[in-house]
Amino acid sequence: MRIEKVSQHGMLQGLMSEPKTISAKYFYDERGSALFEAITALPEYYQTRTEASILEASLPKLASYMDRPVTLIEYGSGSSAKTRILLEHLSNVNTYIPIDISEEFLAQTVQQLSLDFPAIRVTGVSADYTLPITLPPSQSEKRVVFFPGSTIGNFEPDEAKAFLANSRHMLHAGDLFLLGVDRKKDVSVVEAAYDDSAGVTAAFNKNVIARLNRETGAKLDESAFSHVAFYNKRKGRIEMHLKVRSDQDMQGLGAGIQFSEGELIHTENSYKFDESDIHELAVAAGFTVREILSDEKEYFSVCVLE
Ligand code: AVJ
Image (tube, rainbow, N blue to C red; front, side):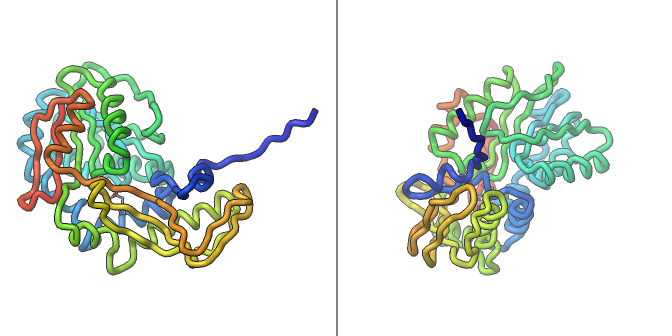
């Protein structure tokens, strides 16, 4: 008998299905995380600065919810830029647990935050938060989960509900979930945010091909893929795809997988929410909507769920 051990890679799974997909979580290698940070500063990408302005304008209100010592837990913390607003102003936060899939990025962030906020205990957790995770045990503290940036929009509606319902199970009565959601709005505004004139979003999308080459030995021609982004009105979501410009055969771990000219590889969905979507999602997950904090144009909302 001969048993052979083969290596596998999660990126290959979606590439073997029809139509081909690459899960959006694969965007966030070190370069992808840096490109995403660049996206958040683009003039077209209103989300990040709008959410930051909502948080700033809502600080007294948020402080009133945090009436005793708080452990703040963040999913997909990235550079934790928005969280700094909370850590600076909400004096009852004494512990911060950033959770991120990009370990290199997380290590840098945790180091910097520990220097900047010596009074706050910062414990990074490097994990794929779409899978079950165990968190350091909490004391008698109030837990506040922060899931900003409308990252919830990357999930299918059923997955989003299941994810929120699962997170609710590690919370106790009186704990909170702060959920950032991108609102439904004029299509031209939302499409521009995913196809910026500087081409940063295109580079972010195409970076998954570079990652595929590096991690699976695919040897694909990166310039043979182009960025496609559009709003799917029926589904209420932005879709990003990579369009194959010339036939390609994968080598390495995915040998045998072929890409045909004109084919679309689906790389991301980013769902947008109106008020009834927010209520439906929260209620299905067992939460009560305490408050929906928004900017003047209602481009973005931070939902206070309990
Ligand atoms: C980090 C998932 C919220 O969907 O807007 C930015 C990722 N994709 N530009 C989003 C993203 C393209 C972003 N999220």
